[in-house]
Amino acid sequence: MKGTAPANDTTAAAQMRVAPHNAEAERQLLGAIIVNNETYYRVSDFLEPGHFFIEPHREVYEKAGQLIRAGKVASPITLKTFFAQDAKIADMSAAQYILRLAADAASIINAEDYGRAIYDLAIRRNLIRIGEDMVNIAFDAPIDMPPGAQIDDAERRLFELAEKGSANAGFVSFGDALTATIEMAAAAYQREGALSGLASGLRDLDGLMGGLQHSDLIVLAGRPAMGKTSLATNIAYNVAEAYQAEEQPDGTMKTINGGVVGFFSLEMSAEQLATRIISEQTEISSSKIRRGDISEHDFEKLAAASQTMQSVPLHVDQTGGISISQLVARARRLKRQRGLDLLIVDYIQLLTGSSKNQGNRVQEITEITTGLKALAKELNVPIIALSQLSRQVESRDDKRPILSDLRESGSIEQDADVVMFVFREEYYLAKAIGQEATPEDMEKLDRVRNRAEVIIAKQRHGPTGTANLHFQGEFTRFSDLADPDRFPEPHQ
Image 1 (cartoon, rainbow, N blue to C red):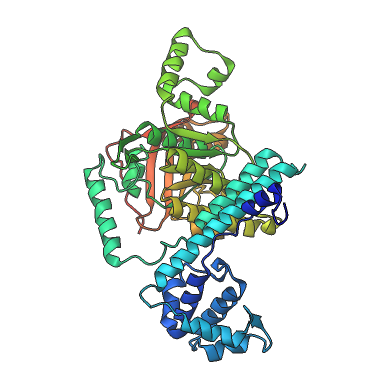
Image 2 (tube, rainbow, N blue to C red; image 1 turned 180 degrees about the horizontal axis):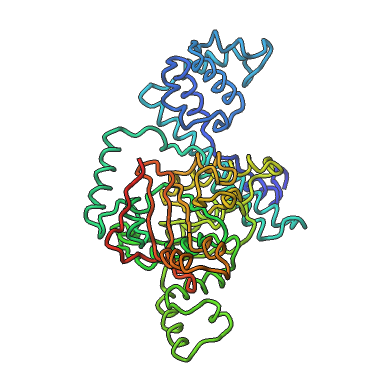
């Protein structure tokens, strides 16, 4: 029939949808800013030019912001100078359009609501764009982007979108900050051990640090064979084993003791890590476990321990050579899906930065440590990041590490809230003595046998000092010393 559109054309027309936007809200907000420049500061902390759907509105908002931040007046007279005389916006000259914006001004009371509406619509458009890209890439199936890489890319873009300038971000009142501080102190008072942070399970270490503090980046460093990974796995298991949570009225789970632990094992496989942990818990040598050189009694101990450990909320990511952006995305996913109270990274030097910094290791390490500190704040969990020390430790008589021994120490030391070193004098004495040991040498060795020091070289919110621990090398296990004089004097 004449004048009737084909069915497929009608379907296509129905499928043609304009991206969500609100041109009227954009016009009225811009008008309010032009009429009263103070309005700009009500929305500028979360609203960017790119959040506007209509291109000329982006230009007007950007130019107005530049003028206002420079202490100048943004008005129809000053703004029109940024547009060519023959520029047209919606069939009007730029000057006429800006005058119309001023006439459409929203009241100062509603300006922030308009800004939030524009922001939310921009987020929806970005979600649509990401979804379209996911579909198109999945259909095209490029050779250099397998499905796993597509998932990582989509997840990265979604988390970046969630991270970028939440409309709820900004200043908090000092009163709110004080309330949070008092709540933290009350929780510490009620918690066993009176710690404000997560208990590491090591008494002397907790005594110096008050536990592992939320949002802190804790760098744990040491030379090879000192026991960095062993100490990290000990803490990880202690925290996870103590985990207790209670359900809230909204259905979410709130951690009341211990915590859910994420462990990025960039050097060892998950099986190797599990072997270490079960060796620590059963006191059966990991070398015997690997060789199968165990008795029936030992096997029963292993089986019983593994049953108990099945329910411990310790999650291991064994992917090697991941970038800081991949680590951040995976940590966010773990927090969202299973919860997260402590994150451990073994170790910093095995992470990579973005492509722009590859080839410049100092800048790459800076990007990594800055990213880890930002992640600790964002997720509000302590992050323990292991780090190597330079060889200059070996050339000194006193081989206790100091801050300058950190590799690429500038950024690591700067970004860390806590820097602690693992040091075992027994290791160096045994090497120095060799086979020709005198009675005096053996006496000296006996004094430090099975002892380790965790040196707190930097603590942003507390004292420095040394926690003395017992170390069983056969089981790679750190524990408290039985010495009554266990708390060392903090350094001034």
